[in-house]
Length: 256
Image (cartoon, rainbow, N blue to C red; front, side):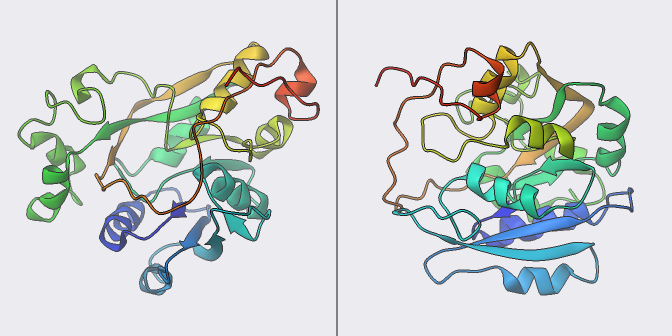
């Protein structure tokens, strides 16, 4: 789990994880340190409630050093994957409240050969601010009762129109050996975010990504933060063979 500030968002997310019914797992909590901000207090708060391990990375918008600094979710998740010891690895975001307790069981039961992602519903700022006024913890479906939840345009679409996990996901998983085979996430900057580049590489190999059946997560709204001196408006890549998709050979970049 990558976490960058937003203490109340992260607390709600960790609360939702305390309801997971699968017991043989470890939650790697990767705390992104920036502007003298850290979430070590949340780790201390939940260490007796979750099988949680604390990791941290310094945010550095000027220089990326593997396993020392971070500047994108991809570099944060890569650090977590490399630190993990599990056979099945799920990357996730500290902004997403889980719906039902059996998420991990569903991943393990459904997985056949393609990576699986969770459908994300988006909350507006108003809905996020009202979360503590409803009992979402005991019944996450209550979140769907917010006025405008289904029909309000949030992050470019309505939740009613979100039927599959889509091209940009926040919770996605597959066996550790598959992450290693694919070379994890690209660590160079581009306009491709989260797992978009991974999906392009999987398509080149004739693979796909599925949506976790009957499951969803809720993305808590937060303002866009401008502060990192990082230009993400850079080209992606074209993949033409297996070595390129596995990041073992350079791939040509798209025109700028």
